[in-house]
Image (cartoon, rainbow, N blue to C red; front, top):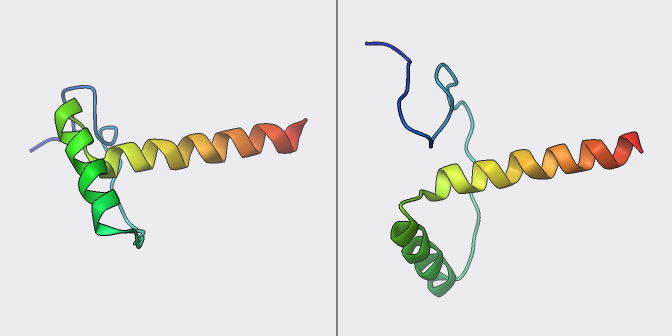
Length: 65
């Protein structure tokens, strides 16, 4: 089995998840979020991971200015 992942979503080939983040939100908010993601063919893990990476990148850029 190889780590070469096909497709355009999920973590890049070879990258392993090693940590988890747990959040608490209202069940209705979670249900609506998950329904929207399903409709778009996305997963919460990938989308939240992208947001976190973007947040870090934006803050690094601000610190360099």
